[in-house]
Length: 198
Length: 385
Ligand code: SF4
Ligand code: SF4
Image 1 (spheres, helix red, strand yellow):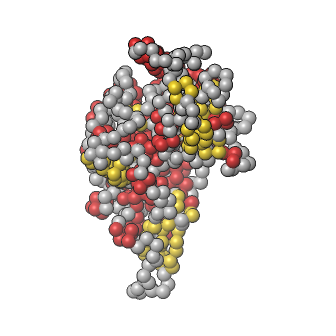
Image 2 (image 1 turned 90 degrees about the vertical axis):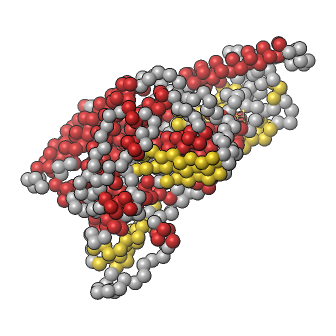
Image 3 (image 1 turned 60 degrees about the horizontal axis):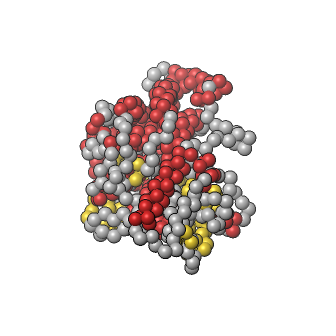
């Protein structure tokens, strides 16, 4: 052991350096006073899922086709979907079901993003909103499709890069679908219209 | 280990021999801040000296393995984050590696590099926090832990902009990584790595030569290399006992064969060595990081053959392991060709490392037990699963 106290003095010097340094260097003071100041959301930030709709009608424009893949893949099984009885057209112009109800229990949701990843229809994405506390811990955290719907404009705003990729993917898919319809002897009663032209 | 698991909650038989009847039986935990989670030690004390010690775990059991057998391979990935919740990225990697073995997927080079970068950053922040907690247990309340957390913050910021979450990253996928690096991430990471090298010098100036730390850790909690090997101890604990065994060197998984780094080894196997090994490992990790960030190749981050939906590996079994910050983390998977694993087992390093606790604590003072436990580096999420 060295001279007793030498190491301790050296340590105290470091502590003093850190203490005074925290007044001048952002590297030594990384916290922010929360409600007054907020750290802007990071590029890939994710909190809870939302349902994307195109156009202006937040219910008729929902991209979700109630295929229930996300319901099956969600690890804690916090999504519950009831499929519609009738069909309507999706963005590719194909006749599809839609969710009669689509609920997510966000008190169970662990923000893992699996639902957004497995969805083949770009219909469910991750929000960046995190101030969701509510005094009603059951009903207030059990979100229905009306509360979950956000427009695709909002999605482009919060995740510009990912939204651009998703738009590209959808454009490619719908032009493929239209090409298929055009090639076959045009099926009756199916008029493919790209619905997400914004 | 089996002896511990057979009698999980039963107390000790009465202590016989000289001084019998004067022993004190004490349960430390499960709700005790120094046990790093919900963990109990049943200790028999002779005055202040430990005569017996029995680790009791299982309080945080979440049925991880059985749940994983009931759902698709992909759905278990976010649950692996919660094993060792300090190191979600290395957990992801171990699981992804095993599934890739099972399904025969190839990981693109760029993804391998990103995996190395994220894993080494994880190692640095894990070791930083461990040292912070160890010092906290020793009574250095606050200061080292706050410094460690301050630096960890910067690494977590990197994780957040890459993966979307700070701790539950859920980033790796079978056949690569979920997303590519966002713009500007590389530069930020390089800055953080530079800053960390400076910080480590400061941290060492604060701690390594500190007389109190030396007095509290040197020759305390000695673990002989033979005992460590016998118990299946891995990771920094094994290397602190002088056994040269690092899965990164032994298996050379990923692209670890392309980096030049050394494996620090301890001489005495005491708590001080375990502290110092971690500091040295962090320095080696920074070395790897600098090279990896420099050489990161361009290209895709996912195997084009990989499928997210309807993933069914052919029947077979695979054991994959990596050098997680705490030791060898392994996954054993058996597939019967269905979308769910037939058997899913985790080999958690913390659990194996914990089994030698009695051996290290025997005859020491009660206050040393806390420090020795701190130097083992356990996370109960992984011990109990
Ligand atoms: S984010 Fe994860 S837990 Fe939440 S709803 Fe989606 S799949 Fe389920
Ligand atoms: S959100 Fe996507 S995956 Fe889920 S039911 Fe709707 S279309 Fe299917």
